[in-house]
Length: 472
Image (cartoon, rainbow, N blue to C red):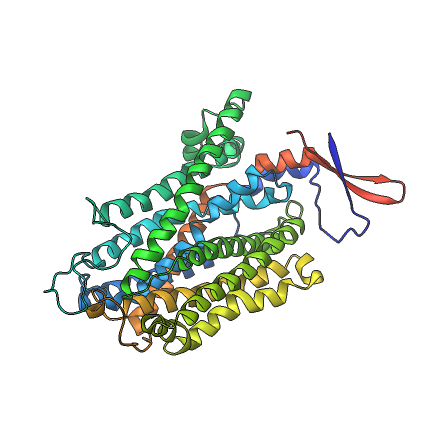
């Protein structure tokens, strides 16, 4: 069976067709990242600055009081928001048989290694979470148990269950990466040397490429991807509620966790497209990465940007229409007073600018359109996390056991250690990702070869067509 798609208006470089010579050289090319020493040094320096900021903040304020750690929390949440859904992007597009996703799957899967960073960064936050039970004497309009996700405070909540949930994400995503990269590592053993060759032999030396191995690998990736899809929104829900909403007295909202999850998919897709564009533009992969991944993904990114403003409007109008004192105080704090300008930057980056870029067909079709919008999406997400989590951590520790927030605090500007931690956490994530690119083949070789067998350009009467096989 074959499906014909018209290409009468065939845009330049929209589809690429690697020949046999290109495909034969792909394993050697994909295992040699090229000149990345400068980037490694930059991210290493940023990581060192982050460690310095963390140590200085811990020595001055300790870990028992969470209020001084708002910018650390914002940095962690930003990195988690961007990187945690990335492996799911590759799994989802693979499950729905998207042909254009083949060049970006490995780029998405390597973000799984940053999941280990997310888990390590999460441990100090567990030490900062205030007690669920009110340690002070119960007074007027106060709660004996603060509002939180956990009902009746079951055993191990929140520390044990949240830590276990956080640990499950890098475990599953790293297994997905390892399974997907096994055929490529096996095919690349002859092109690598030293410790890297020993690693490839250890991880993929058993791979023979039999039909049974292929079926087992693909079934395992599908099963792990399904489990990851079920677990990720739950962990995002935990972070949005226990480290955000529960620290602002009286903040009760069912839309905010959905916004957090939505922004995870939006920012992950943006980051993947930026990395993919770098490989296409400066990495020498033009013969393997056409414009079609950017064109197709740009439509999804545009839809996610529109969903962001829809959910944000639903969140805002619910509180505005209710007009309860606590709802007005939360709106004043997070939107229209204390953090107003950060919210404006958040809205510009997460919605207005990406929408303005991607709504134009010529820009959306270009390979640079979606990555350019993605840069603004990442900036908007950073502002979102600063506004939300710095705001939550500094809403007033003395109010968390009250029925509602009664005083609207001012915004908190970062000091030098906050800035060090902010750039250091982002730098650490970049450093680990670069190391992952050095270790694993940067392109999914077996999927690109598979795609090359399923497509070709043909001509019927006066039109040019893409002939795309659908074997499944």
